[in-house]
Image (cartoon, rainbow over all chains, first blue to last red; front, side, top):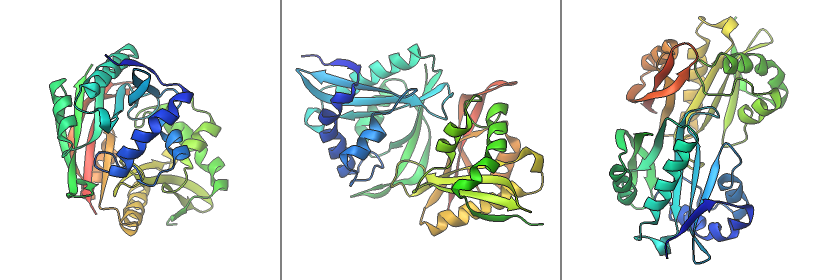
Length: 162
Length: 162
């Protein structure tokens, strides 16, 4: 069954939190505090406009979520986004569907480009996905992320004109 | 008289707001909303730990302020910072003094590097200052900032190992 992607609602949080927590605790892709509690994570993730939050829902289950926001300040016309996929639902193209949805939403908001400031270089699935969607790596910030197994690794700045 | 640089206190805000507002309204260096009201600006600027906020005080007057924060999420060991100098007090090396203080504080916190994600390329004073302190431009995000007179201009990603 293809997922439905829609705006997140407040009541979705308890179904986002399990994989939000899993991703924070794994610490391999995002510099969130692994000890973040649900309430604080909710404040971080379920943000107010101009931030938009989406969920991917599949058979009544929330299997992914994404945040779209202005990158450089509230009036920036360059967007930034974060994508989360429930690790139990990986490898099924959910990240790509979420990303396509968010890119379309960004175009609809009049953003001129999307820039990721911090794609962990060892997160090869994400790097490959973004390249396949047309993103270009502008630079790699050396040793910018502490990978729990690999130590300090680089983070890519990636750019796509919309 | 040399400025004293110290941690900001809640009661400093009314003396920061005039130049915060001036810089937001000018819209030439930071993508803040020019219509931001004082209360909202205070929430943005006078942030809680792990963010640190500094002021430069000179003869009882606050002439500059700076924010130091983790760049990529609460546990990031790469720092980010923003510097504000009262435009009436420009050209006197205040930016450099603030930046030196903040770099020292960043070292003290154990940050491994400082990265600016978004230095407006036409803000040549800042670009020159950062270069003179050892920062290197890793990339320039094209057309990433809407300058009120010059239109879309690039933003530099700048990096310094600490």
